[in-house]
Image (cartoon, rainbow, N blue to C red; front, top):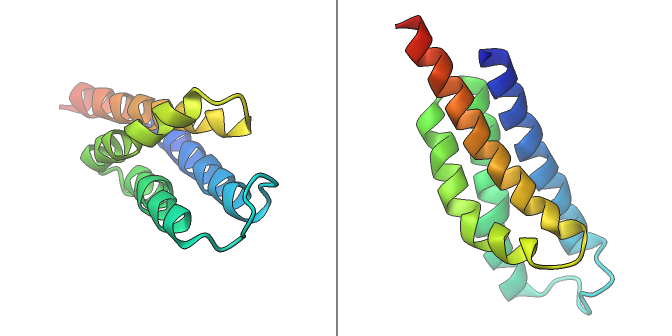
Amino acid sequence: MNKVGVGIGVISGSISIILWIVLHFYNPYIVEVGEVLLFRQTLVTILLPAILAVVAALTKRRIFLFVAFLWSLPISFYFMLTASIFSLFAVTCIGYLLSFFLIKNNSLEKS
């Protein structure tokens, strides 16, 4: 069960990183590629929690998976309401929470 939790955390974080790259560099709806405000806001609310989730899953620091979930929840909920590929940010956010619970459950079973 622990390997499944780690895998879900790493995959969710990796998908979020890939989606963030697509959002900024391959999104036809952004007029200017380097919109600084949008770049900075999504860097802090999407990319950093995704990196934190990947690192937390690999080091089995389950509390940081929960932090990544809470951190990315507001913008993931916003993107969930869009009719685009970026609604997958909500799925990856749920993946952080699922990974947290799977790793936590495994830790409780061992003790």
